[in-house]
Length: 208
Image 1 (tube, one colour):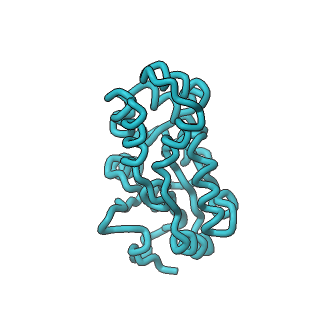
Image 2 (cartoon, rainbow, N blue to C red):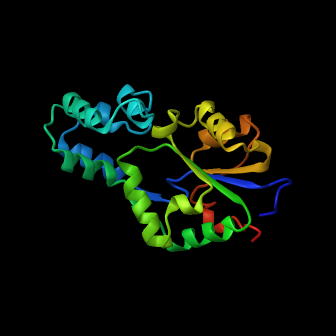
């Protein structure tokens, strides 16, 4: 890709961009556990108060599990629930971490991800195994929704990053697999590229 004017930073989404995910794996395990339709809508109905509270850090993991048990009527163990919840996290390919390390020599890298405190240790371990370095040592700063209290596509998520990192949207490229998130970021002036099956991270042609 051609280098845009004043392109100094890259702000990455995680799932679907760096991390391969399979939401159907978690939904199938939910189904097998006997969870009701309400819990089968994740993540397409994030207005479901339970998921929203958990992924914005307003609900701790123990309370989240207890609320799932209450809503589902299924007395699932912590271990079984965690395995189902984390099964959507598939892998981080080595070649993507190699690209990120190359990009880090030229640009300041940031991450903004809708995620939870159950997911973070799992994908951080995947990243370290693929890259042979910790994710937090490669990125200038990482922003998780459950830590900052905001979910994309709410504009407050990007505004938090802008203010905390001290970056300018017009000098920052944003990459995400959600078109809703892409459009929201563009409202704030970010340069943005929608990552999908025909435009994946490895095919963007970064000027290295």
